[in-house]
Each structure stands twice: as C-alpha cells, then as structure tokens.
Image (cartoon, rainbow, N blue to C red; front, side, top):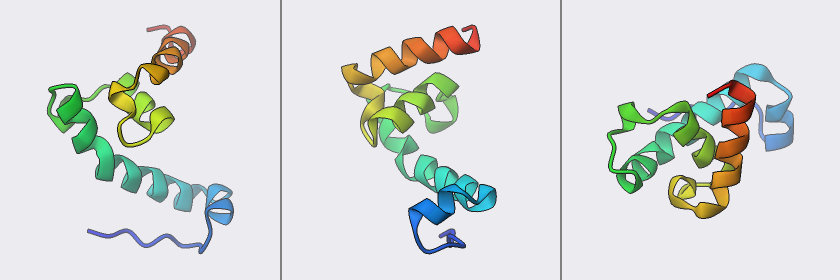
Length: 80
C-alpha cells in the first residue's frame, strides 16, 4: 500500500501533522525489516528504542554504533 503525502515538499509536510505522521509511518514500514534483520528480530518485536535508532541513523541505524548515544539519550529522557 502506497500512502500519498498530502503536500508536495517535506518542509510543508513537516508542519502538517497528518502528513508528517503518514511520512514517518511510511518510513518505518519501509525500513523496519532491515532493522529487524540487523538485530535478529522480527519487525513486530522491534522496540521504541530500536525504532529511535532507525530514525536517528537512517535505514541501517539499528546497527550503527553512531546511534548508541541517541539510544542513551532516549533511555534517559523516557526513564528506560
């Protein structure tokens, strides 16, 4: 299923909550499988922290050591 973004450019989309939510959802659906494979998990077993690293580091962010600091920051802010 392809989700059509309501607005034509990312800046406009980022200011529209519905468009932004669709964009993030589409991104996560597209790359969650890569993240899951890299972590030897199924996509449905990915945690919020895993998805945060995916967000922070791009399609291979789950396995990049450069996203560990972001993981630490999320743990501190979320009380994890």
